[in-house]
Image (cartoon, rainbow, N blue to C red):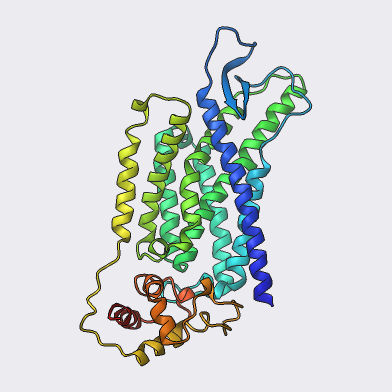
Length: 392
């Protein structure tokens, strides 16, 4: 019953995370695209730096952006912040429900690093905080005023985090944490920088003072960072469903291709949306393709020479019963499940044959299963299991 309720909690929190994330990504991309589409026109109000004409849903919109802020603010000013806050909050709740509450199974792989559950959770929380403070320090330092240098060092910082996670946590947990690491930076940008700066501008206006333009400039810098990080985060967040990514021995290097390709894709999407000439973003296209093909090449299945390995049905089932059927049974003995994952049963030889492709994908080509390798499945057992499937 506990596992059943945990599944519902997981589903509802995940649903909320998706809803909030869609809202945040949509507004983030929209406002960056809006900013890039602004144009100076002959007749503009005092203090307006540019305007944009848009059409959507059968209507036309005329949007103005002020260089700093208008002289007066309306009482119905809309703040875009809760999408970011709720995305992070639901994401952290998912970490708790999916990983922290059963850290021994989900987060820890003894062959990577032998940890106690409390240690894994503590490392997770501390690393997310450290990630933000280092990034924020870089942005506030003189490096933050040099866009290219900041981008390079920021990229190295994320790659260092990816390397760290893949050498501390299980494969699935590692890439999810890369996404959480980046997502925490993005949400903290909104919570600690963008919204507070906007509030300072608002307070100055209400007090009859001229706002300092630096607050808007800093806020825009962090907003631009967020949009470049958005697409890579999405890939890392769903990586647990793809063992070719999370189960790869050099998964941290795959993260590099995800970040570079995702950032370039963001550049193309936004540039095309605002009508930039193709010449301004065409150079990003071959980079996207190169990153994609590099990731595909890295994750391509390794050829196994199993023709000379003779594994009997009894031996294959012995391996499966030792490492798989505690979860993949009609009534799982693993307390973390009240139903077999993905409804895959591996209780007899016919079921093993029927699901052989999935077994090879998750337990032979990668180390995605068993979860955290808590049963200690050896490389020899994986090879034999793959040999049995190959020779069917």
